[in-house]
Amino acid sequence: MIQRIQTVYLILVALFTGALPFYLTLWTGSEGNTFFAMDISWVAFIFAASSALALITIFLFKNRKNQFVFNRLNMILNLFLLGFFVYRSLNLSGETSVSEKGIGMLIPVFSIVFLVLANRAIKKDEDLVKSIDRLR
Image (cartoon, rainbow, N blue to C red; front, side):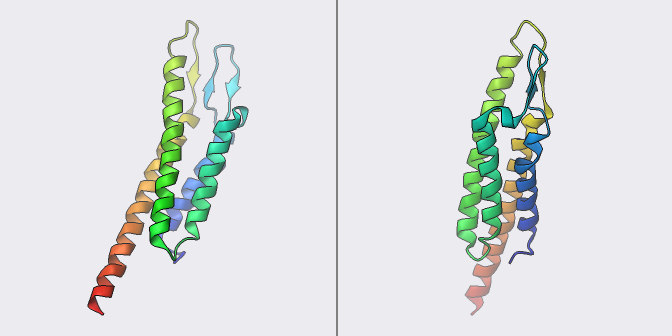
């Protein structure tokens, strides 16, 4: 059903990955120019894909196994993005001039946390349905 707690978690993931990367800076370069997700096309595409995948997952409430798999795929996308941000932040700190990391680099971390919480809720629903089926 759509009024479950995993829907709230997935809506938060969709908002985090759909809107916040375009308003929060990812990093500031040594020349003072700020980078947003829309400045790097493939990063913007991954954020948009993660948001779309979260919205699609919400409407798969009748098939909990597919919902679980789609959340796992979304986690892999966010882990890939997080790995890029970690790599980029390690390269930024080695510069001779000062550069800043933005708060936008933490968006995949929050998304992964909410996706894990959604998967736990989906698993709990699946276990409940299996226990009810055993009683029949």
